[in-house]
Length: 449
Image 1 (cartoon, helix red, strand yellow):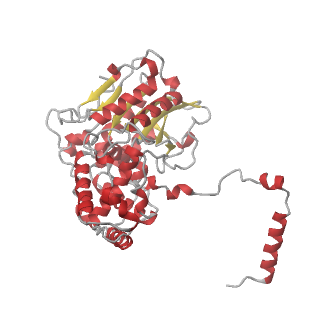
Image 2 (cartoon, helix red, strand yellow):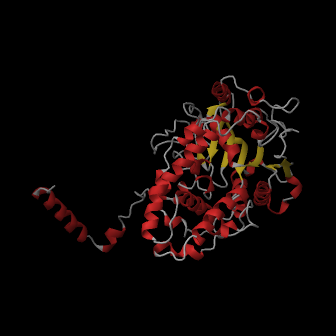
Image 3 (cartoon, helix red, strand yellow):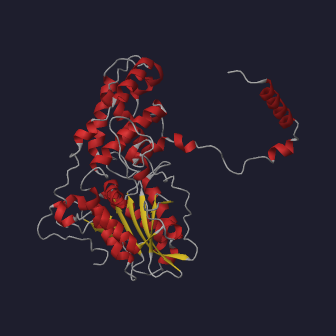
């Protein structure tokens, strides 16, 4: 398309005018607000639950307490910090990488480094553990989170007050709770403040941070047929691209999937992006959608018992908000436990198609539960208001309850919150629908025990 003479003349005049500006005038025209949206290309948005911590982009809602309101209670549940792969994950990846390195005499091109590459994130002594060094250190992440949490909610805790840090019993979760507590308490930290909640037994029933373990009727594979409908042909295309660029490597789709998965753990362990840089943004985006779909139907709104399992924690929080004697609860668990809770809260609802890739869906697990994910449910008390309000902070962003944001700072009154949760559950209860053993607890009480 040719530009008209008038347009070309206008452009020429504009360029001449800019060039004629003195140096000082040019520097004074620096934009006060960036016009770039670089975060859309962040690899951390595409790595699923293996991603180092990344904040929720949110909606731009102010994090400080609304005008004439005060935060009088904060209830935190946090995922453990950045970690190595689990033992099972590590063994699967190690098998694929051994096949890559032993399957050919030479590898040419940009992937030639893989022939002798040391996959340090698969170190057997580290598997299942928190990372302790590097720019994405899990232990440092939780320590800093504890210090920042204390700074934000300092008026909810007085030195010498009785305090507990509730932790699921897996080692990496306990270590996360300890580091958070050290950051929160500083020199007054004492290990006796850590209260472990056994996650290896279903005898605790609902009185647990991991109530899924006692939900006998829960089946994460119930929607496997639906998950299998989603095409993973991008793995074949990626393998073809890499094989063409690096003769001799002969990658198969399963190995490509393991390399992408390893990318997140290499960041967690070493802060290195050498494996991540193998892949294009489009390939990582396609990978992330497969993870979104899997978790949606296994542990998210697409599973018939996710919200029911999440109701255990939310029921306890609802009771806490109405309990004037409590102003702080600090809990540490796993990504799965957070998925169940947000499924009930409805923060990321919406269908995920399996016949094509969606782009504008809310259920994006890199945003929901990266390493160190954190969910805070606040009680707001405001002037001239008879009842408290509930406000949700997810990964440092205020997220309103969909369709229920009429309160101060887009919060929801406690009575409306209770009604909203009741409607979401639609008659389901943990005791009735999970098929728990007779005699096990049917609600979470350890906050008060």
